[in-house]
Length: 267
Image (tube, rainbow, N blue to C red; front, side, top):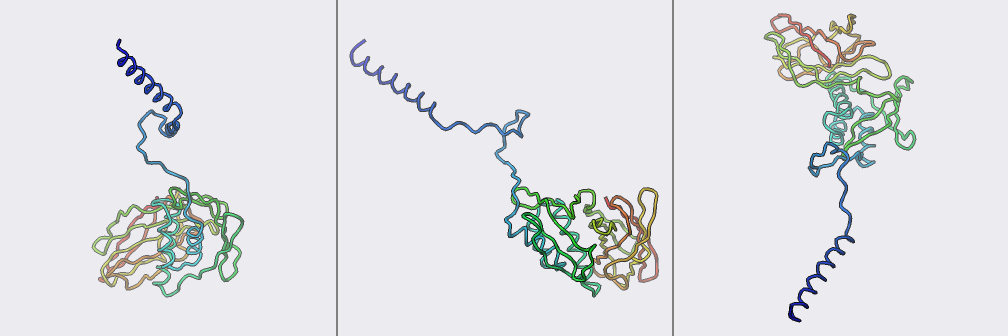
């Protein structure tokens, strides 16, 4: 081999050696995502358990305590779609709107810190069973997902309708928007939306609820009932000591006095 060729070979060997050394000293590769334990390739999208900023969390619970429709509507943006947090604020928004439509808005309250990661509020009338502590906040990707009320989880206590409507003959269509069993009173609040022509009467005070073989009548309701229609009307039916998962029977009376009853499931 000529001196020139020997020199060139030496340069190549040295370059390869340096390349190997550089790769040994480079940053380690990120280990595979443990969630992909099946061996499937990672898509590059990962979820985190991050909550919204503390100011947004506080604003969410301030809205919940306020019963103010504008604040409740704004608070929805801080929640993950379909989560307990989204359903809870959605239910309260419908309840507050129904109360406003009936001419008797719900009384709100101001929240106070209750430890490092909790808030509390009591109704203005000071009834002890209306004091609430919200705590154990969980999040995902910067959205509020879940929490407890007075230490109780809400998974089995709240549900949202899927938008399915039930026809009430020729009078209109009815659907369940939300159902929530109160932690404080154990009563069930069912949010019902009625889309009907003008002059329809919703017979809310005669609504019944059947679950596990037992039936109870509505103890009260929130929202307008007589002479409604021409738009979607929201009423909230209250059933004492009842849980989510049963069936509501509600009667509507048309302008021509025709009567139709519908059955609505809450799960």
